[in-house]
Structure formats: C-alpha cells, structure tokens
Length: 235
Length: 235
DNA sequence: CAGTGGTCTAGACCACCGA
DNA sequence: CGGTGGTCTAGACCACTGG
Image 1 (cartoon, rainbow over the protein chains, first blue to last red):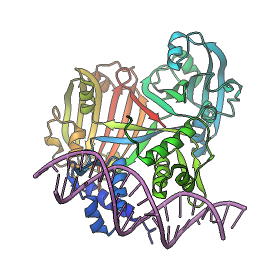
Image 2 (image 1 turned 30 degrees about the vertical axis):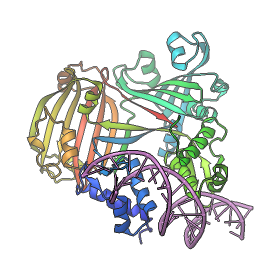
Image 3 (image 1 turned 180 degrees about the vertical axis):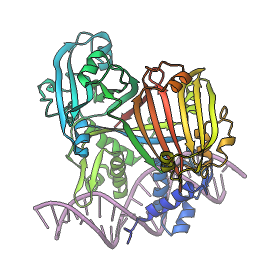
Image 4 (image 1 turned 120 degrees about the vertical axis):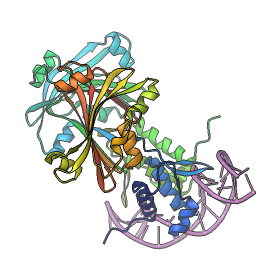
C-alpha cells in the first residue's frame, strides 16, 4: 500500500498534476480555497495550507482579494547546495586529504579590508589549502578570515578539520553570497593542482557573514576536468 | 509604524535570532510548540506553523516524538535561479540580440536518443544560436528538442522568441537537471563567440522534462570573461 | 508512560479586490 | 457588496520517541 498521504498533500498533488499536464496554463485561475473544500471535503485551513505551500514552491501566485493563479514558469529555480567538501567526499565513499600550503597572519590590503569590513592594515588570517579526493588534487582554496569572527582559526589542524567546518562551528552562518566563474589558473595554482595552466577551472568566490562580522572571503578553484556542479529541480 | 508582523512571523524571528547569535548551537534543542504557546500566548497551530516553516527553510530539524533542534548548518544552500536569458537582459536594461546558426530537423544518434528517451534515428529538432547582449556574444546555445513535446518548435522566429520561452509556453516544465562545468570552446564555438580558443568558458548542460516527455537537452557555453553565475543566501 | 510533533476541523475576524 | 486570501484559535486524534 502507498503510505497514506495527508489531505493537504493530496490537494497539492491534484493541483500540481493539472498544472504539469497543461490543463491549467500560466495565468489561469486555480480553484479557490472554498472550491477545494467542497471538492475534497476538507476544512479551509487544509485547503489553505496546500495552496500556501504551492505558492512557496513558486508554482502558483496568490493575491489577497483576487485569487490564486498558475505562476509564470519563466524561470527554472533550483537549489544550488554548497556543502563542506569533506562531507561531500565522504558521501561518495572517497578519501579526503589536505595539503596545507599556508597558515599565516597578515595585514589586510585595501581591497581585502573592504571585503571584510576591517581597517586597512588590520590583522587577518590567511590560509591556502589543496583538497585531495583519493589523493587527486580537486580544490585549491585561498581563504581570508576575520579574526573577530573566529579567533582560534589558525590553531585548527587543517588536515583534520576543513576551514568550512571550523567556521560553521565557531561563527554561525547568517548570510552568504557567491559567484561562479570560469578562468585559467595562475602558475602557482596550476602547480599545486597538478594541471596545465591552459586547463580551465571553475572558480567560486564566496563571502560569508556571521552576525555583525564578515567572517570570511574565499576563492576556490576547481579543475574543470575533475569537478562539476550539478543539481535538479522537480515541480 | 512597522507593518504589524503576524504572530507566527514573530515566533520565527525570535527563534532565528537566537540561532544567528549563537545562543542555540547546531544540535541544541529549540523550545517545543507547547513552550512557544506559553512564551508568546499563541495557539498551537501558530507555534507549529512557525517551526514548520523554519524546518522548510532548513534552519531546524524536527523529529516526531523527539523534538526540534537547530540544524547542522553544514551546507550553504542557495537558490540558483536559471532564467530566460532574454528576460535577464531586459532587467539589466540591455539589448538582446540573436544570431541563428542552425535550425534543422535531424536524426538522433544513439547517445542523443538515449538522453531524449527516443529510438535511435528518430527525428529531433536541432538549433544552434548565439545570444548577444548589447551586440556582444555572451551565450552559445546548442539545443536538441523532442518533437513530441513541442511540435511547432522549428517554426519559431528565434530572433524574437528564445527557445526557453517557446518551450515553457508549449511544454510545461515538470522536471529539470543541470550540470555546470568549465571547459575550453571548440574552434567553431570560439569563432561564433568571438573569443580565443584558449579562453575558458562556463558550460551548462541542461535536460528538461515535461510530463511524459524529455522536452529538450541543451548545452550552453558562456565565455568566462563575460558572464558569471551568482547568488546569495540569508538565514 | 508523558512529551513530542503531524494533522485536521469548524469556526472566527480582517484586509483586499473587483464588479 | 460578495468572494477572495491571510491569520488565528481551541480544541481534537494520531504516531512516534524516549525514559
């Protein structure tokens, strides 16, 4: 037997199907809560919850006083999940290794100070690591950390704990932004990753905020031949 | 005056703040629905809704019989929104142009037939376009379309309607998956984009499903120097 | 077993939209 | 004005977890 679906779930599925099959096209009205109460013999709260969740998923739009309509599906939106690299490899059953290239305290230059919202010349933590998956270099990570957000950062044993783990542990995440680009590695980066300087890489720049502090800015370089981001989306 | 926040929103904010400030750390218990009823003088449905939505946002995890806990924020998840390129440019106030390189019906090879869930040799629609932003080539799009999902695809005037628009209009989207990689362009692609063959590109491979059909598989190439994906996330 | 979350109801009041 | 959605309550029954 199928696991008994809750009533609001049945309503959601019913609406979803009509949209997916094209019975109701973008802009068309969806049955009102009152109509769904009759149609399914449920209370208004239940019908309301079904439509509210569909709205949260972006499948319909609701306007108070006017009604519910099928959303213009002019975008494919999908969860891009950025996870801790260690965990990601563990899930694939692969072994994770780290090569530590730099662990140091430095003075922030003008640009970096701006990114971290610090004064120019303020001390910052700087680490450069290469992450290995089954002994193959897969990620070059150049990271600056705000000492105020994670005072003990430099004491971390980065062969055992990833910077991401340490930061999530000590500086609860409240905000993050990222950019993904394609670029060629510098000579140093190529050497550290064991690739040619002509091999294209994905580069992710990330900035994380924890409470009142910018916690960290990082530049992560993935060799194009060894890594890709992927995701999916289902209505 | 601040717009009066609904009760469930106040509860959510209160919990969110305690998590963001680190008062409650990942794994710590969050007050139960009963406790929140007392604390805020709300009904259980209201307290429940607050916690349910926080769970949907990934900030807490709930286990029936056990309780609610602060989620392990071991992942930064963010909405990667894939939009129609035309619309994206319109929003930036830029002009969109299209160069049509190929519009044809072909026979599917073995690999393509597999992707589209068709028999080998079945007819498929094939288009190759270059999208221009303010007259600069920004995207090379090589796309195969399942005729069953969009019979009129080849009749589209691609200088006015993007493939994405046509497909969303005629083949309601039910599912999609994508992969983002870095690679170098082929000689043809480089020529069409007006870049050197040594310039790294972001490539997005996308497969969309509409009801019973695989609607389309597409390969989109963005010059690394002219385009990047970006996004943000806020708890 | 007590405490938890998961679901559901039958009402209610309000704000808003469109005719 | 009637119909819509947005919110909220005070109950209820159930399934599950943990001691």
